Image (cartoon, rainbow, N blue to C red):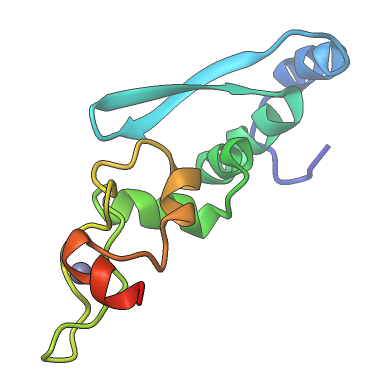
Length: 122
Ligand SMILES: [Zn+2]
């Protein structure tokens, strides 16, 4: 039980009683096409009360920062190559838009757009 939890003692009691059962909790977060429903374990629900982003991160096995970065990037995994002007290529990686979940987004980090793919794979 964390001290920072903002859930009422009553709610925490219910969660605690169900912590070892098969009962799960559903919630949703913003995704590209609206809300994405995820299932939280009792432990994740506990985190959720004080820090929803951290709970979602736990669901996907990502860090909190990665989840927020995924949303901030507009659900696009950006090409890691630099343009001839030395800026990061603004195209999505191959299959990198839209990226449905943050774990997939993290997996695409450092990959390249179709334009840059061939030159780099040599
Ligand atoms: Zn590129």
